[in-house]
Image (cartoon, rainbow, N blue to C red; front, top):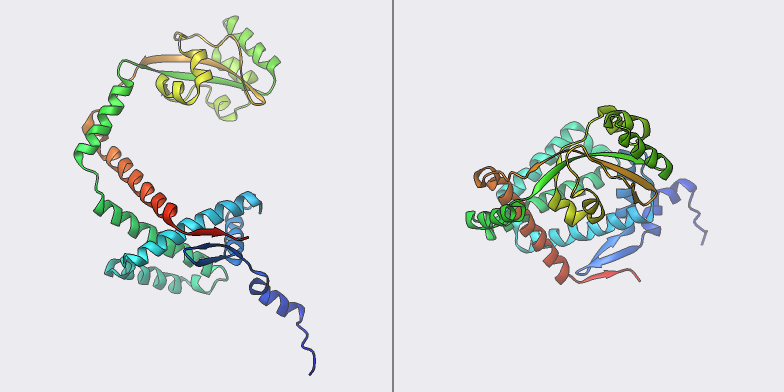
Length: 288
């Protein structure tokens, strides 16, 4: 028998299947490394500065696991058999064929993302239908928010960010010498956006700072309008000087103004919990 020798071109053509390996199984369904390879290539094609890293591959694998679990549940519930689902899938396929996108090498990966998107939408609609958010639910969430911010204030903060403690201290000295905040900001700050605008951004509630950034909250909670942190705050390799441009009472919008947003947020939380429950009960086995 004559030995069969694969040419370089043939090796390249079949390398994806020859060297692909199972990365994980989800309820018995395998996730192949070639799928993640294709997603990495597509991601880097859209983001030229992105690097092929273990972190990127891990994130894509985790997303693939989630998409797989949702797709399995959509199939179990027969949501993909609805007329709406089928019509949308057919419409998107026809558009791809008309534009010629279905002939592109990356189409398989792109089309998989389209199907995942439709599965996600179908499952979200299913949860919205079976676990709807009532007006009472939204009102309870509103009462929690309004109670949380009642009687509190919000501040408009200016930030002078430097990578050297010496420059941060010079910025403090400049403010103590009654130099305008804008001038000191433009002289010492590393943040190009704030240097260009010369003005602080919007207001932030002190309660949010107390929960999210305790050191900053402690440094500015008692400062009056026009005052600043006399001691720079260290955060990693950077130093910040903070200036209170303004402070005012927090005004929570009315329930009618917030009802739509609250309902959407609560529904999104229910969808996230439902997906989390699917992942919790799924039999997910990483490759050994």
